[in-house]
Length: 375
Image (cartoon, rainbow, N blue to C red; front, side, top):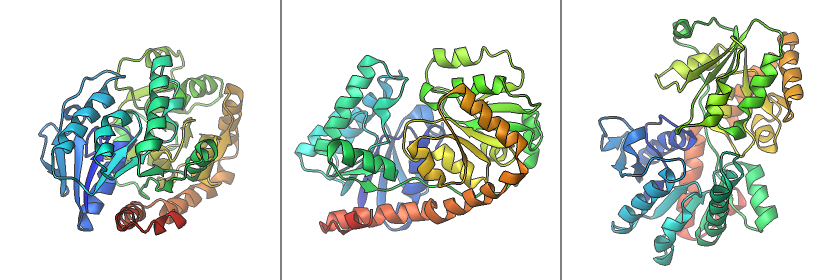
């Protein structure tokens, strides 16, 4: 198969879940004998802009770097570039923010498979104009896609219940990891087991503000380390940094290879506040690292965890109570760590994710649609 992948900032991944997803999925598809092209932005890519990454062809195209325009402009140029090339067998579009730019491909009857990226239109960072645009983009995606992909069963159920449209369940992946360089912690001034940890984009729908307020009320000497940032100027980030609690530290984006993994592997517990579905890569990474996870109890997180974490409600008091509970019952909760790793091995290995994608794409091209019965 010749597969084009859109909606990625850059690979190897330096920013965001879809970048990690493409960095793991695409080389595996190449190893299976398929030809894969990924459209990237120079800002988020290797400065040397190599033409290939593990056999994946990389094409770098421009954009306008603002919160509203970055994705739209880049996908517009990517779509335009692909329009005048020899047709691909599969056009795999990650996210629904820029669906309108693929209308020419739809008119030419190209095979469009769109990964819905959960419920992007529900993110609190968007204003009225942004949410209106996204709802239109999702509406259009349902009409031009030959297949929709949902990365969680709860998202699949949402589209079926709300729009009467079935989708394929093709999820994200993760690794089961062990520590190899514990000395990395010294660079962050912490010791194993002496800190809570978060790693995510600092955006309102990840509820970091509630977690910070809750942690300020917890009686503990442990620190809270927050790794991540926003790829645009953010009043939300600036407000969070005003905390007067010296235990709460913002590390900014952590890109150095191996560092984010070691921070995961040695934390006391991992806090996960995401509220917009579906299968979140940072939650999978925490599970693969065997973290003791305290997560927002929305249906998407509960599905991924499968009983291997502690769930809180969306309010400061609930978060504070769960953090305090973990502090007081730490030894009793250790079984959850291994259970989380086992769940990643069984349901979320990257090899399984790639094999499932390849099978569904191949069956789609055959026109059998047999994959719909299993996915």
